[in-house]
Image (cartoon, rainbow, N blue to C red; front, side, top):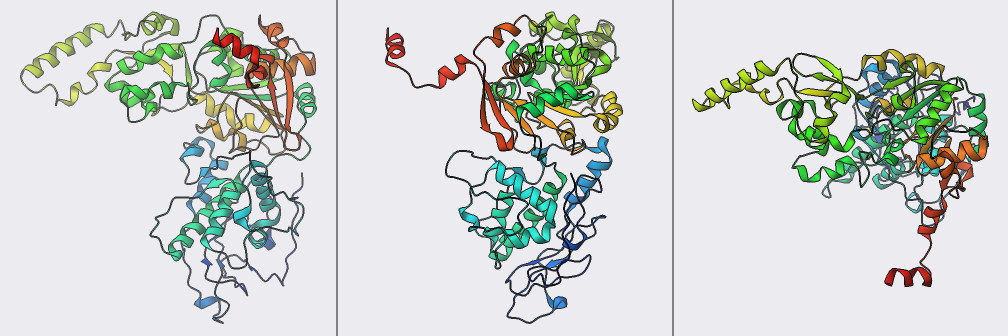
Length: 557
């Protein structure tokens, strides 16, 4: 899809933008901005709009808006901000150096806006229309569809035209903060005692970052939004990249991590500052009993897999699977029969375990009895030395030195077997880095399933793939910070059973496939224009209906 370029307009009276030169508007008041960099990443995803200030090399751009009643020229305008946007460099580095990606979307300076799709009718516009009649910003309802269209307009027209259209001629800090929201980000919190200049300074910095992040993100394809577009792509694709998370295993009783019933929510009573600390390598070294007390909750069932795993195996059997990048540690990909070369376990798995001291490795099943009994598993080759160290520690403690000697700092984890899952503080498997660079270039369809995409660098894969490659989401909930062409919401097993069984006549090799297929599956169109659908079964739909007199009577008996 070709991006449209805008010809330079010498009479543009709102902002005149040039590299390393100040630009003077003619009728705006009280706002001065320097270095509003568009965050160009240097790749082919974003068009370069030379006339509107979008620069190939991310050269600092100065935009100065000064008071019209002062007749001051550019050289006397005083900027509020004079800092180069570090997000621009970070975004560019992420595009060129994949292995340096170590932060998640949730760790960035701007949080993703939590859209409320209910309520009043939203403001709508065509991103191809440059003559937009805009209501006051504070009256516009923020929705994901609107944010997507604003970002598309920004990429096509450049930030100069974007600011001209979407900011009033005399913007306040509230207007700038609102524009940050409309792009899909939550502005930073500011003190209630801040002056208007301070508020404007913060607002400008937030808007600059929002523009950079928007330019670095993927935009939806305009001609890929129907279910038939997805099914046709499934039939024709030859190198499908499947990105999976915990949601594809929950039907087996394995909890996910971030939902209301997930692992982290269940760990609130463990006295940890952050429930994620249970997967901290530092904490494991100091006290492995904490991990072993909860590991049974995420232990995979033996010889089991879900219909969704069966779907990935079906792609492999049809010669369509390029790779399955899974964030799961349950190793169910092995149970279903995926070939090792077709699976990247981004966060490791329970398939093997290693002694944290001597690196002795065993099959993961060796630890299962201990994990189920919530007992620490120890390395047989380190046992004698461990007992000796304990005796020394007891002696030192009797002498009042044991608690302070560095040699006993990690005594509790000496000779402990650790499942080969990737803890916080550990690097991702080398195989991930060695395959992802080429896979994002080769794939012709991306399917993201059962994940909230909160943990980098896996969460960034969606923005590394060629923007013309279709992307589909199958998930219980939408993902606000990503732009998928088709979103199929609902339980993963039901959604993929509907697609394969009712839309494609594909049979998934799983004992529950026909049962799910005949459970009254229906596809509901939420918004075809934005490619959003929902799959549900008869039982789920019935639960949403108001109770009848008959059901009330049964409940009271």
